[in-house]
Image (tube, rainbow, N blue to C red; front, side, top):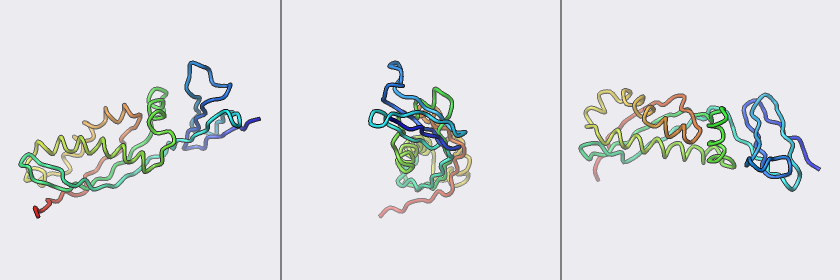
Length: 167
């Protein structure tokens, strides 16, 4: 036998395996609005993926500037799994079975790479004068990589930039 697995309003249910999945597909998925999928007991694997907006707060330490000085950058980012078919398939490949913290780790690694690239071209004085000017620049640079993961950046804020003292 099997069960009907329902997706709540803000999640997707993904079923893989079993005899109801065509051989040309890895899985079947439904998202939101209390839709359901049938899964065979013992043959199908059922996983859920959140469609909520996820907020992550983080401090990137040892961000190097053009003058090789180190700064710490505090950020807040709001992201969401994209629901269109192409991007959802990518997100499913990367994030199925992952916790919110594991999703956050991937998102923050992508953001850190782009933050390092942009801040590596700037002087500390320039960064301190207008730190918020660089948030849209980082978001724009990171967006294509995030789209490849099936993730949309809703908001990206730089809260604080502090210079780290050499010890």
